[in-house]
Amino acid sequence: MAAGPDLSLLLRLTGTAVLVCDGDMRVAFATPHAERLLGRPPVGLEVTSLVADEDRGVFTAYLRRLPVLDRDSSAFCEVRLDAPGRTVVEVVGANHIGDPAVAGIVLVLHDVTHHLERIAEAQRRATTDPLTGLAKGLVVNDRLRQARRTRSTGSLAIVDLDRFEVVNATFGHVAGDAVLWQVARRIEAALPAELAATCARTGGDEFAILLPATPPTDAVAVLEGMLEAVAAPHHGGIVVRASAGIAPVGPDDAESFRAADAALYVAKAGGGGRVVVYDPGLPDHPTRAAAQIAVLTQEKEELARQAFTDPLTGIPNRRRFDEEIRALDARSRRDGRPYSLVFLDLDRFGVVNKMLGQEAGDATLRRVTQVLGVALRAGDSIYRIGGEELVVILPDTPLADGVRAAERMRGALADSCLPHPTDGRVTASYGVATFDGSVHADHVAVLRAANAAMRRAKASGRDQIVAEGGGAPGAS
Image (cartoon, rainbow, N blue to C red; front, side, top):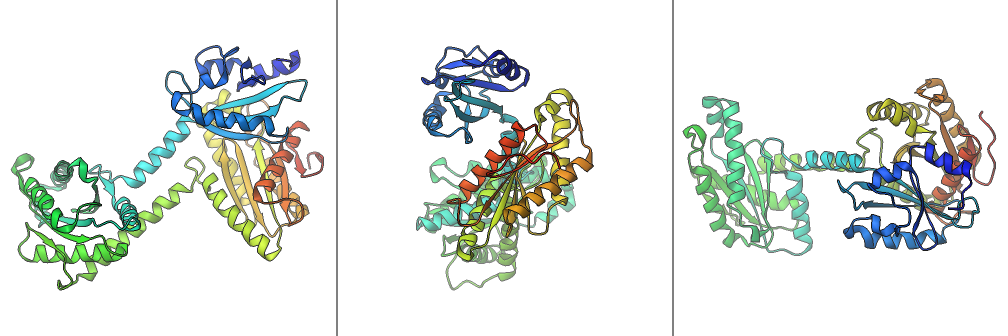
């Protein structure tokens, strides 16, 4: 590595996993933290050998992009390491081959394993019934939509336990919950794997089953075997029966559930314990169908909320940012109205996590987003797009007003006096860029310009605001 001793020492002291690769993508320099993260000294190795086999192709394609970047740009990639624990890292790469102080491709590795685990757990909770372990109704709803797109000839069945309230009243809710769990296992066991069925608990003692490639006439035998299994005595000798209604996959979700529910209503009205296939002559039962659809809609809205929310801070995540900035960009192009982005990164925040612990760091990050959120105007939005990086969208805002908005945020963070173990208080560096139809091609270019301005703010001493095309005005 061509770096001088000062730069090398700085990189070693940051506590950050940093690799520098030469033009052949061999590791020429690695910080101690990178060696610990990788589980071995990487210097001299081809950098692609550090990545798990299944991610090597993606990583190789990512590396090919880096040499064509300018020095103010960076690119992101997420891969698993070829090391014990299969750690998932976010790689932030920048091209500094032309910089004599570095003369290489710089890769910064962030361990995001626990972050992804939290996201996966949030998604699991959003889609899994906590009592039975089956899917929630919204999963069937989504699979039903997929089946409809492929013009499936499959079936939707609704299974409901007969007079289950008697079990709860006689044996108690603990015993009733145990029976529901056992019923769920028997339903799963009655569905052959080749049917590719999706089974969900949709509420109380009711279950929905989607058989995407099984027409209703063939589904009858499957459901009859299922009801027979459910009726076998449960723990403590408790016996329950169930009824089922089957309908073809219809033109929309509501119609499919309404038809299956109408068939179930007839099956239960006849004394229960049987399977009925829907036909248009059956009486409808709109109250039950409406309730079912309302539950599915509520669950779907909750899943969507979690998918677009950062689980740590509770603010919108990168996925929501990408969606909303694209919509704003299109609107601004159409109406000729400007918008600004503020890209901010907390200064030396890794020290907070390292010296105070991850929990303290997480709590501080949550507090920072709350403080900054209060400083925003109505209509402005703040997003966490990764690590300690936040972006604020300022609609209908020219550059000068965007800088003033950043000044408000910087002032609010200063007034909050959130403690930093070495710098006294938590600060951030801010970059501001604007789309006005004359400079940037699209929102991607605006974000890149705001990111580059933020990096200049850091290089100017941190706790600074830099507007695109200008220098740091100094702490205001």
